[in-house]
Image (cartoon, rainbow, N blue to C red; front, side):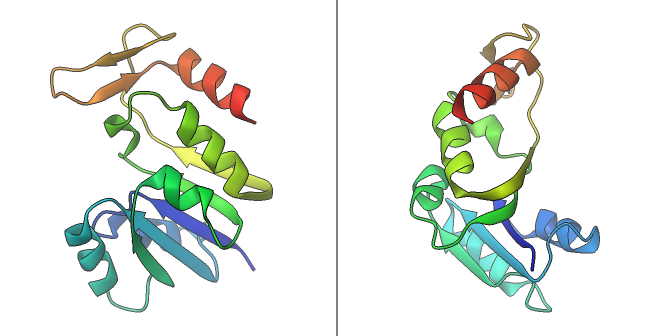
Amino acid sequence: RRTACDLGCGTGLSGEALKAAGVAGALLDGVDLSEAMCALARARGGGLYGRVVRGDLVTFLASAVRRYDVLAACDVLVYINDLGPFFAACAAAAAPGGLLAFTVEAADDAAGVAVGASGRFRHGRRYCERTAGACG
């Protein structure tokens, strides 16, 4: 039984993609900081999510009631400067052999973090690799 968590689930669009691709198996949870987004995700048809929780990603993961085989963060890390606490919380919430899939906007400096013209954080590849590696 594969468990998955859609981190920063928003309206549920990425949850639908995770289910359609077979990445999210029997159980898909969602978490988002915005109650309005959580309401939209809950309203998606077909019982897409087992549960949708309003909350901060790191806090949610630190108190997770289950371990996840797949953790997915699509277009959400652009709102987080220091990814260390996020990666550490994901490592703690992952089941043995679990997978974390995430997207970032690439920084010009591959080793660093910058704020882009849009006001969103941009993370370099080496920064992500180094930070995730240090967190397990």
